[in-house]
Length: 227
Image 1 (cartoon, one colour):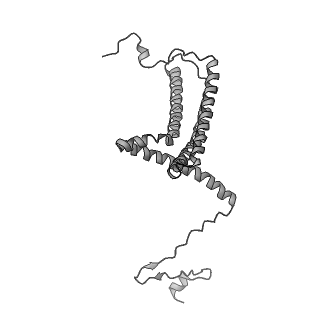
Image 2: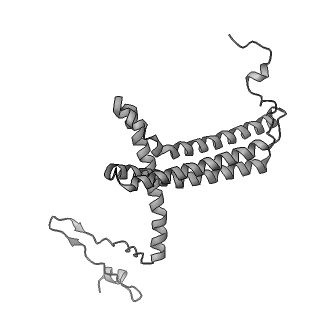
Image 3: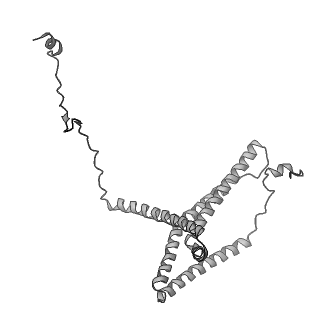
């Protein structure tokens, strides 16, 4: 045994033989890459149904807002008769305006209450204390209205589109008469509900507005700020 062998290979030494790399036809080393594990297929009908019940409404809501944006852009660049016709179709996207109005009012109320709290803490301004229970009830009620509007808005637009399709395909059919009666019944129901709620609300004592919340100009009462 040579000196090198006696130094490297001992009785308690194990020799690890590594596999030789495979050389490709162009002289490059071919390496084996392990593939990721396969994603198991979802065979449970309950899981598939739950996923579909989540994706379909979200897709319909996204499509509704996308069509509303396209309609708004097309109306803005159109002229004459086409513009008038597109403006008359705004009922298809009326729910979007309601959603934006509810969101805007909620944000404005939140910022107003935040301004009051900051003024009370840092400016020592005497303002009416915030009724947090009423504030929470307002946000919850507005949130429920927003969710309902996001659900019913696309359905309402879809029902109107069905009416337009029936008008195009069957203008003289009894289907149009039934559709018109259906719309009139919905309008009548909403009108009765609105009149009932307004009547009940007008009988109750209305809230009297207090001193307006101090702003920049109210701090300089009596001083002419017109420069």
